[in-house]
Image (tube, rainbow, N blue to C red):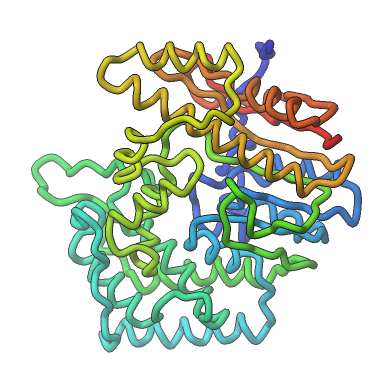
Length: 414
């Protein structure tokens, strides 16, 4: 499939576009994709359509749909992302915002006086890489003052916890204020990591974050999307329902573990207690292999019912033989990814009436310079399942590598 030479990186088609868009910018996470992209697609969706995102992530699609008045459902496996999505899409009354503001002011005063009972630091491996002693002590005090982070929290508590999550990353040593596994370098001769200049006033930082979150909470969508916890591989959580439009961005086959990047939030809010749990959840996700999930992948065997056209089988063999050490593992990773997507698309097809429209925002990948044409595989799988009017639109270049692009693969159910 030819890619136009004029395609650029288009930062407005990435999560960077969402930073200052109210609730969409509450927390920067890699799974988020551009509000602008979703809005452009929603403009083509007929009124009264029921919208589904089976890889809901940070709820970009459900929230956009809610603001436009659509009935929307987001399906998500990760319990922290379910919590965050529900917080982002919920309806907040004036009294909820007032309660959160009053609780925040009271909490700030208690923190200044040193009165809160701090919570224990989460059991994150090498936690000293993430936060210096002063920052960690403040986060423990703040978390103890707010409380836990469970689905039955009040709406005011949810809003305070969103502020807490923003500070978790803002006060961390993570490079670029992002939850990647790269960390800021120590200044020459200082022995200390330089976080924020001039001994920052942590309490004032918290109040600033609260102001931003409350501003978004006041802007309620006309309809409140439904966020459901479940696995997109089997779609069991929404089985028996029908949807007129699917807009989603599943994980790309690039072996990036979203569980790994979400760890700081998940540990702090009690959704993880050890690395084994993270690996177990990653194994359940599509496209994730980290920790114990990697060892399980080495024992995984392909299903005879998978989707393996000749050109795909040849790609898997090329990856397998490209590296004696890791080639077989990465070949199986790509095979399992598409086997899972094939299962997902089969289950998804059963939820769609005739003439339903689907949009999959996906990116291609390379392994040892072997290009995996992800968009072609999606097209062929959709065609095999009887979809019509299949189109591929190249959205943007993903980075400096010439071969990597992002696509909107769309189709109509037969």
